[in-house]
Image (tube, rainbow, N blue to C red; front, side, top):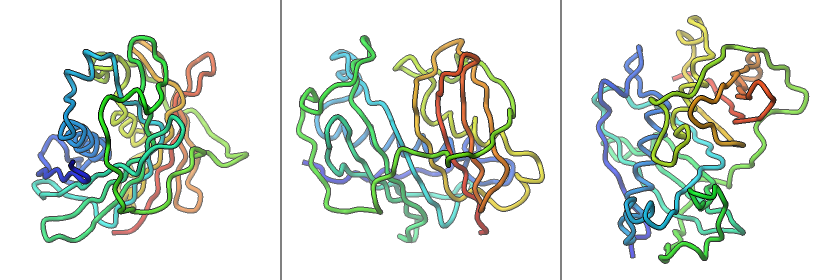
Length: 245
């Protein structure tokens, strides 16, 4: 069985921002693609997953980059499962440049769901064995993101539309990175790059849902972001980590 999968990808112009750096949403999409390919290599493709009514739901992801890939650069994303505990699956990623140097890593927590009933399933419901990798890029991420007592102010309001919905019927997990990056003003975008990203998904956002995006000021190089509904449903909590490159 394939214990570790490597996905090679060249950053395209559609992935790059105004600086020529790969967008965080594209990095998350590339990691998601690598995870999908790994599962397919184990014998179950996405079409079969859909036929069985199964889907993967990302709960928490924490990623750190020492160097943000740029337009036309080639990266290699390694991913492997660290096994499951309770209903949660753990998956790591290592991002390498074309010279074999590590430029980033990520730790994530997932759960298997019934996409029709929107119900979390036990790992035993997955019909294939998933090999457990012995490699690690760090400790498993904690679910908590927002510090106690942090003050947040409204940045903007958005509505979930066709462009963000994926095959599972909800706002794709990678698109949340764009929601977070959109809270930054021009001086912040022109300043130190965002080299770290952590997010916890608390409630799925579906077509026509309204999301009020709130943010903190910069504290210790971190900007905290939250998305809530007008009724107070907490869709997500995230942190942008800024660093010099």
